[in-house]
Length: 299
Image (cartoon, rainbow, N blue to C red; front, side):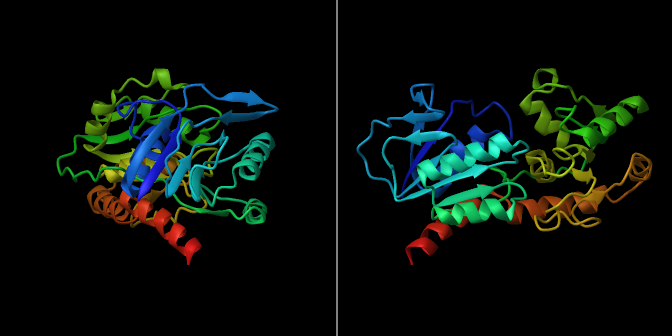
């Protein structure tokens, strides 16, 4: 299958969970023989639309187009993309305009999607459905874990619960607890290689969702590394495989963290969470979902 991927620039070594590494590179390449077109600002803005002349004559079976790039010519009979959460009305309106202009066949949403958005897609022949985040490489389970608890990532307005957890863990002042969150990504002090190494040697990874209601890509990554996820509950947790007491531990407030730190289920739940991710949320599973949508449309 010939695949075209139109996406922004990035680095494969930039991070575990970036749009570039997952949506732009790994997923298209898992679907078939992929040609990449990297948007480096060569397009044209006009009337709020970013138009790009792809400069190719080849025929492709399927194309991934990163929002909000609008090709001057339809590059494939089947076009798909992904969206995350839209907190502002302006973002939702921008996405709707893009659907109208590009006419994708499939929009995979990482998060909860309003029915109104699903119905809007139908008007333009576009299926809008939940397709959660995924991992690229299956990691082994490390039995020896020297870190009891860890909290990493961005904190602040979008992550109220993660902010509380990070501050709580930091105030414990324990050598076996890592709490290194910052208000922007430049404050994150762990390299990617060290990040993966440390999380795989962590018993309990504690964090909070985006706006306390959306599952971050980080949850899939840390479970894949074998850490036992600790989080408050959110919509779609069970639907995506995060089951309290089986594949993660649910907390309601900071008092629950004390109980978790004395808990001994990190190995059992960590292994179950890892198996769930590696069974349901890998790049190969997602590639099959995309291809199934293509075949369903054609039959």
